[in-house]
Each structure stands twice: as C-alpha cells, then as structure tokens.
Length: 373
Ligand SMILES: Cc1cc2nc3c(=O)[nH]c(=O)nc-3n(C[C@H](O)[C@H](O)[C@H](O)COP(=O)(O)OP(=O)(O)OC[C@H]3O[C@@H](n4cnc5c(N)ncnc54)[C@H](O)[C@@H]3O)c2cc1C
Image 1 (cartoon, helix red, strand yellow):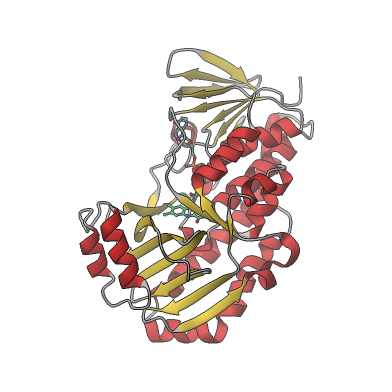
Image 2 (cartoon, helix red, strand yellow):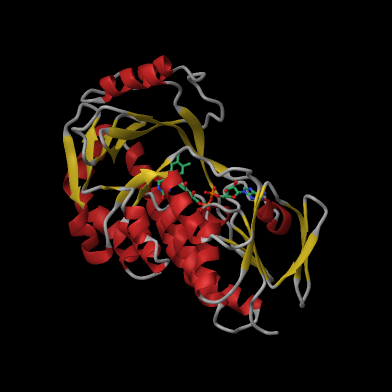
C-alpha cells in the first residue's frame, strides 16, 4: 500500500475534527483520540472570512452562520474613545464571505456533528509514538496500541505529539497577559471595537442579543494572574479608559471572574517527522491579534486532507503539506508580531500611524489570505 488510509488524529479540537471531516470527504478514514472527556463549553471566537471559506469547503457554513453574529466593521479607538480607524470588512474581504463571532461551543458542536459516525475516543491520549518505513506505532494511555500510515498531532498549544516526537521546549510567552469574559446588555456595540491604551488593549466583540465577548490584555510576562482573579483590580488596571469600558467593567464585577491566560506562541522549523505531522496550535500557536488561529487550523486540515489523498507515499504527502502551508503561516506570524509591535509604540506615534496608514496596512496584512490556502 503506497497511499494513506489509516490516520490517527490526536486531539479532537477544531483542527482535529475538521481534519477528520476533510479526510472523510476524500474517502480516507481516521480515528480521533481526545484527552478531554467532554468538549469545552467556554470561550468565544472571532472568525475572519478566510475561516468561513474553509468551513464552506467542509460543507458546514450554514450550520455555523445560523448561530453566529456577522461582524460588519473593525473599529480601533484610543483609550478615550477617539476613532483611529474604522475598517469596512465587506470592502476588505469582498466576496470571500462574512466575518463572524460566536461561542466556541457552536464551532465544536457543528464540527462534532460533521464528524458523527467516525471513531472518536474521548478521555484517551497517547503514551508513545515510534515509526519505521512501514508504519507509525502508537501506544495509548490504556496500554492498547495501533499502527497507522499517518499520526497527526492536532493536540493544541501544549501538544504531547510535539513533545514526544519533535522534542523542544514548551510554548514561549510573547509578553502579553490576557483576560476574557462575556457580559450582557450592550446592544449598542455592533462592531468589533478595540480601545488602545499605553501597553493595554480592551476589545469588545458583539455576539448578538446585546452580549459582548470582552478580551483585554496588558504588556506583561506574568504567568499568574496579577489581579489575583479580582475583577475590581482588573478594572483598576484599565482605569484610564473611557467610553463604554467603565460600564462594562461594572458588569464584569457583577457577573464573575474573567478568565486569565498568558499569551504564548509555538515556533518550529519543521512540522513533519516521517509519518508524523503537527497542525493547528500544536504547530504554530501565535498571539491572537490577527484572529487567525482557528482559520489557520481549518486551512491546515483542508490542505493536509488534499495532500494525503494524492496517492503519494506518506512522507512525500507530508512534505508537500508543509511546503504549501509554512510560508502562509509564517507570513501571518510576521504580521501578527508587527501589529503587536505597533501596539507597543508610544501612544501619540501609534495613533498617528493608525490614522495615516492603518487602513492600508490592515488590507495588506489580510490580502494574502484572500487566496485559497
Ligand atoms: C486569548 C486567546 C484568544 C483567541 N481568540 C481567537 C479568535 O478570536 N479567533 C481565532 O481564530 N483564534 C483565536 N485564538 C486561537 C485559537 O483558540 C486557536 O488557534 C485554536 O483553538 C487552535 O485549534 P486547535 O484545534 O489547533 O487547538 P485546540 O483548540 O487547543 O484543540 C486541541 C485539542 O486537543 C486536545 N488535547 C490536548 N492534548 C491532548 C493529548 N495529549 N491527547 C489527546 N488530546 C489532547 C484538547 O483537549 C483539545 O480538544 C485565541 C487564542 C487565545 C489564547
């Protein structure tokens, strides 16, 4: 057998489930092992149009769109609420598709439905992976084993496949500490709205029905929550912000504890080792400022399924996958870092840059993603 027909996907997140669906559409069967017993109900996602186009390729666009909120514009303001730039997303993305915001569980459940009937083993992980010219051999955490043509690490930023096969250290911090939460009662905010302070950003993304997904970050390498989980201290950190921010923090204080996480990235020279390949955050997690994490994971899945179905031996398919995906992902990471750098400029300089050149830079950041992956 030269081609590929036995695939193990480690990780049933967004990358892993979409890969399983994409492989099935090309007639290749896959098994998924997922460490969690239940899929997470928390979190929200902003999905730019290239991510929507990837869902279309999986035949899932309607199921997602019916439960998502269309984001018409991305607005950037200073910390006092003065407009720096206002991007019309329809103009930027043209006919590629809408940009959407939604609870993460919407995406998960649509992908899970799409993968129904496929062998998914929750509550399971892997203990080891070895390989030779004939197969990759995996031992699972219950002591059972299996032989595969391909093993795919779709197991997120702290990937076990990466650790077991590729070595290397943990993800590295990018110098941002972030908090996330959802508040109700803000029907007046209908666009993606970021407010930029000195070393601080507050972002509100409408989810529909007056609900807002709020994300804020400060420049910091802290790995523990510097506010100790106290929303009042978080409000103090953003004390100089005006506009809707104080009112939003009032709701945050009333409704509970924002979720803290340091922002980290994964940078590798290779995502392929023989019959083993990494996709999604396992291969290339990055700071969320271009909101391309999910889209890159979905695109990886589509391209890997296409190359896996081309009839070549596994190592050649995987090299073709890496060759096609790496330049695009690298470019997104470079733009992400440049945009993070702009946020760190002294506010007067940053504001001038955004007012004068922001629209042009925004279009040029996303233009390469208009092309099919
Ligand atoms: C603060 C923040 C905000 C973000 N906002 C956005 C956004 O708005 N838009 C966007 O596109 N992206 C965003 N991202 C990035 C996005 O969340 C990720 O890029 C995306 O989830 C990657 O999908 P994945 O399937 O590769 O990984 P994950 O979604 O992490 O899925 C990995 C899966 O593997 C499972 N797993 C882990 N280890 C094992 C193991 N050893 N064995 C078996 N299973 C395992 C996990 O349980 C999980 O189900 C954000 C990230 C952060 C940190």
